[in-house]
Image (cartoon, rainbow, N blue to C red; front, side, top):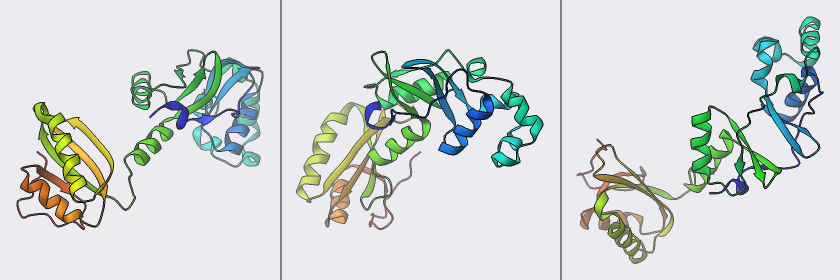
Length: 231
């Protein structure tokens, strides 16, 4: 899960530092984006977002069709340039940065997008939406596979993985994902797997018979009456 595979690549829509804010707004609206890198040649100077224009015009006026924006608002926007308003303390990441690290960076710095650098050159930009899209695609959300969640002792996790893979092979289940994260009590981990195969129900039954605590399965799977909820 690296930035290079999920970012919007260059060439990007960019603003020049001397561009007035009304022209910035036009670029944002025409291209369906919320922010623009501000550049001179290949040099990244800063980033300007739609929200940066709120100091000069109300959000309601900026949502109007361009031709219907009042003259006084237009004049206010044209009196300032991107270079005057842009944020210069830009948070960037490397093209090979992991998405989970980028997500932490966005949360800590309260930003919705991060320019992606390849050396000293801008390679693209990655947004919160890109990170969420990557998460949904990597976890195969919305496809025809079945989601099965198990609670397993943290200290036995590696052995559990081996056993789960063996059971999936026995029942000819194609495994798409196998993810894990600690639960609140820190003694157990939640394991989420996405599988597909004709013997799905037999697979789930085999997991129960192997003393795995199956917490959730897709609704078209048949679970034993001993199904439990996550605490």
